[in-house]
Image 1: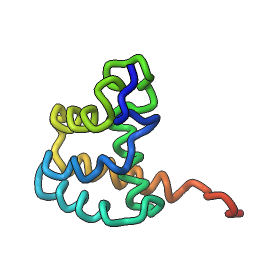
Image 2: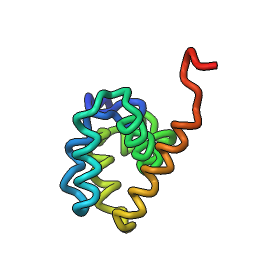
Image 3: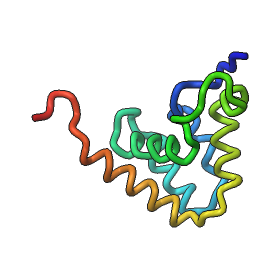
Length: 108
């Protein structure tokens, strides 16, 4: 079964939907990331954090998660997550740090 909301990895278009699912610090992070360009380090770090949190790398076309779509999967993941927002912000900071360590095309 194909769901038009399903992509290979967490899509940035879903980020605004996640804004009101957590506390104030989470809202502030989403508000900071949403207006940025899709290739900005902040938005890429948010996407990487969500890929890790959602388990996107283990999702496949036949999985229940894929059949529901990326939006529903991300919403459910954040609703079920019992960590405090501070831990999610640490995960975001780690993703941002990990991305800063990677070389981009054209860099020596």
